[in-house]
View 1: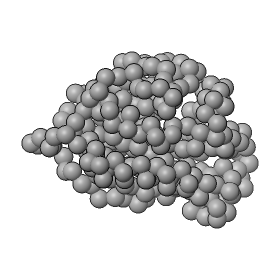
View 2: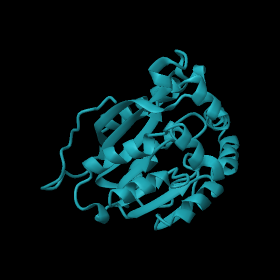
View 3: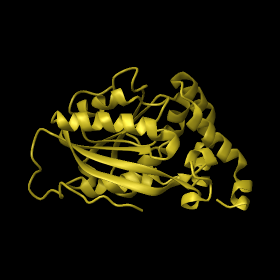
Length: 253
């Protein structure tokens, strides 16, 4: 990031950086409530690409017409993922989030069939077992948000053969969480609960808010931090005739 860019983004950098640094869930939810009216503007200024990239990954793997797929957007925030889903023809979308003010912003978009207040990790998702064709969670897997131990709950509400798409940051400040998350993901695969289809590394995830986030100075990686997208298929049935390939080669971009 150039000095000129940094100078134009002091408030956005400060707010996003502050959100990354909060590790207490109750404090983070209060922060998100206060942040909700400015959230979309701030993450756009930081060139946040995760919603678009994650939905691209999911949409390539989901078989059948997109309008037939029932999707749950976990930690939906203001609805950025739903916007990307709708743009690709996915119209049956439900959302949950732990922030009432974020849910108000999401409701105003008019893209969700149903929205629920739910703090994943402290309570179960408000859905029956095997409800959704796909579950997607973008941007909430980090310290002080959704704990790694909550991942099996995503599996519970997914139909057998359905897809689960997850993201997390892979920059140095988030590596301890990422390592713990991958241990959980791998243990579920070893137990036969799901199979990994994609682990897609992304160099340009969003602009770094500080040199500490990159660990290499703000000139490293063009001022961006990195991230990763995971895509899994829940075990329980084989893919139907005419479905999409079960393995997609990871992409680094």
